[in-house]
Image (tube, rainbow, N blue to C red):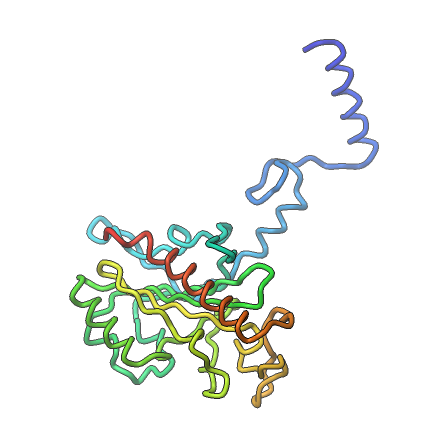
Length: 249
C-alpha cells in the first residue's frame, strides 16, 4: 500500500471514529456490506402462512416458495413490475377454494399448493397466483377444466397472506376473471384486482359494506379502459412467471 493511500485510510478511520459510526459484519439484506441499518429490510419479509412441504429423495419436487417466487425478485414484463407479498401454502388443496365445501380438486388428487400475492410497483393493482400440483398431467388437465368451468372458485390472496372476499357482481369485470393455465402436471390460477376493491371496498376506494378497509395502496385516478389494461397486463405477467419453472415438469 502506498504512503498516500495509507494516509487516506487513516483519515477515513478517523472520521468514522469521530462520527460515531459503527461498522458491523455484513448482514444479508444490507445495501452496503457492513452498514447495519439497511438490514432492517429483513424485517419486511412478506408473511407466509402454512408449513413448507418437505423435499425428499422420493419427492424432489415439493413446492418451495423461495425457490420459485423469491421475495426480492422483481417480476417485470412489458409495463408491469411487481414483487411477491404474502404467501399461503399447504398440502390440502381445498384450502385455496373460496367455498371449501366444493369438490373441485379432491377428485383430481391435488398434492399441494402455493398461493402467492404480488403487489405492482407504482400501480393500483394486486395480483394473486395459486399453483396446484398433481400426480400427472391428465389429473392436472381435469382440475384445470373444472376450475375454468367455475371462475372465481379459487380465493384471492392479499399482501398480508389473508384471503379476500369474492368480488360482488357490481365490481367484477372481464379483466378480473382468473387465468387458468395447465403447465405439465401443475395448474396455475392467476387474477388481478384494483387495490381499492381487494378487500371488498367500493370503486371509489371507500370501505365496503362490512366496514373492512379499502386496498392497502392509494389508488390514483385512472380510466376504466386504462385500469382494465393494467389488470390484464399484471395477470399475464404473473401467470407467465408462475408457470415458467414448471413447463418441463
